[in-house]
Image 1 (cartoon, helix red, strand yellow):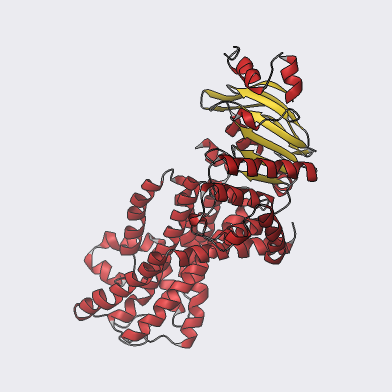
Image 2 (cartoon, each protein chain N blue to C red):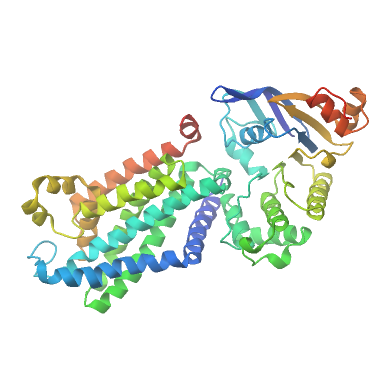
Length: 242
Length: 262
């Protein structure tokens, strides 16, 4: 169970975005931390198959992405950095549309939708147009959408960016609960260091290269730093935080 | 993947297009007003100037309004096909295309569903227009209404595929408007939608030849015959071939490998 990449490289023309990335992400909460332009979104684009892998391999739940894309997609839920909801449709219509793309019957989908929306405190907004929702609610709808088909792998690309503290806390605690309740692999991509907990598996990426990957507390110990902030500055800037 | 899953997927894509269509009320309004203006204003003016002699499939002299009905129906289908494709460019720019691409179902199937949705919307608009046309003394038999449906569906599939092909080649939404002008207007005017081809031949031989090579001419003729319960075999063959070629090219252009190379 999980995600494994071997020597994964990608370039936009001559600009190298990822350079021989070797990752092992087991079931649990994995945090991909890196500054803007580090290659986080490129990595997610490759993992979702939206960008075709040219160099290296990706295995998700023991399936090779280049050979079993359909199987992988049926087990994967994604929350993209940019909102991908249809603003003119209601929450229900958006969720049912996504369920249909996974071949789920509307009746069955509605059962899942009711449960997930209740967990995310969105039941009352079911018939509202997405256009009328605020940023936090839209994000929650996107998370609900990614969970309708009960994925085994969940990728979230900077899911809390631009949200207020309450919305951020609600979303991150919901995803953490999911991780503990179900045996799923979550890849949480962020540049916000306060979202990392000591027990999380942490992957630090910079300039397309993996700087470190292990349990966050172990990495802090290994680099002899007090917290993730210092670890980040040590790895990204090779400096100690002042 | 089971057959049921394919069915629910197709149903979901068609439903989404229908919901979106009814949400965009101006689109619904302009889809009807445009051809009705042509029928009521343009055709009334030209009725006196243009006589249409007896020609197939009509068994007698007909009014100009009756003559342009198939052309206007095809115009509705052409606009709808292009506008639906425009929404694909919008979806790509807004990011919602990613949701479609993340489906575990095969891409060619998803695009076919999209074409079915486009065709369904076109069919709906054409029938509403035909009902409105009854008010200006354009009579269509019940058989005509029935036989027109598969013709409209086929034409919509072809024009939708053409739109998808164009949308895959266009990188920005702004560029699409220019292409619409270079596609919609030449296709429509260089066809038998407004004038019979023999009239074109009298006016200019090279425009006549352009009309002959324009697949939209065959769309109009296929529907003209279908409204009379007849099958124009040559038009049917041309549209079928054009649909297959355009759909295959659209599918290739949407493949990740091709998109990435571009």
